Amino acid sequence: MEMMIGGAFQGKADLAEKTYPGIRWVRGEDVTKEELMKAQGVLGFHRFIKKEMKEGRDVKDLAEELIRNNPDVILVSDEVGYGVVPVDTFDRAYREAVGRVCTKLAAGSKKVTRVICGIGTVIKDA
Image 1 (tube, rainbow, N blue to C red):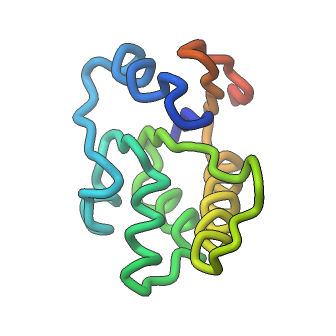
Image 2: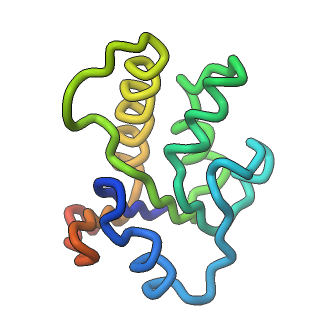
């Protein structure tokens, strides 16, 4: 598993597509859980989490399921935990869920790249 993370509009998707040109990419907001478990690469993984939560599904064990069922996937996700804490209850829960899931995924990933202004910095390479 590999991850590319960073703030919104920082060039993560472009860098991922250039770095892994042979990957078939899916979008987090469009993919089902079954498709996620078979995907080669996911752009906007954080949107998958939001979609699942809006549909009332628990994402608590999502990281463990992905690590177990799709250990070679490449995930591209926004870091959503910076800035002002949202007033809205759902937005706070979503922000926390993305942070917790991505923290577990990063621990289980062999490589994590943080992207700022389109430049990737490898922060983990196991």
